[in-house]
Length: 227
Image 1: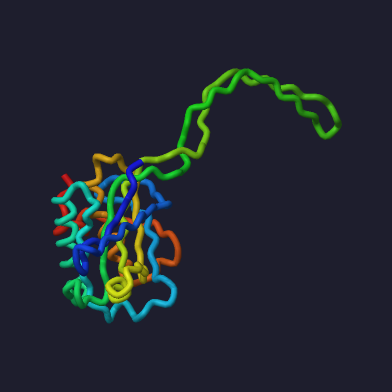
Image 2: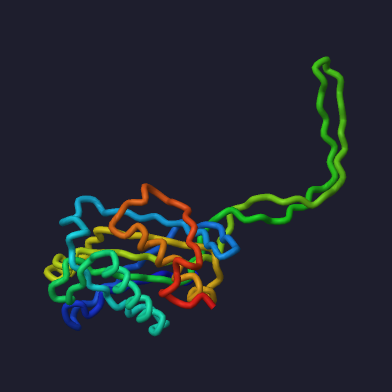
């Protein structure tokens, strides 16, 4: 399992170094035909300092991402998307909220089909009158649903109280969105655009629990290539 980690580092100065470990516990099935099904859970933290809509944002570089080129592209697209939504961007020294994106492969528990061998058996039942009825079943192979780890790709997008972090080093999340979809680790670059679009649909909003939504190929144009 590859942990989805995030770090607020160097926001105020080089002495600021805080690691946030994040995990995702939702998954969704894939869909074909230019549509991707994504599981999303998003919402505000309790008692935010002020409405998210009034805050200036600073998109924090995620220094824990090993693919630095992809991380930089994700950060640039986040800034463009926030501006398009009407948010203001500010420098790290004065921004109201720090926005951070983490992405990677995770193992999530879900129901998986497995082949099950059933040996020959004789089942005895009784009629309403009490007569014994025996039925013999030949050996056969069937399918059962079992709990098993499923390869998934996940994105976590969060906004935290920047002023509190600058003054105390404490991270207080005021909004967080988690999105995931089944996919092998090598598909991270392909899946990240769908997951980012999903989280941004709910940025600053509450999804009222886990939701399964469809993201069409045309919705990720202008983000990252899917090829």
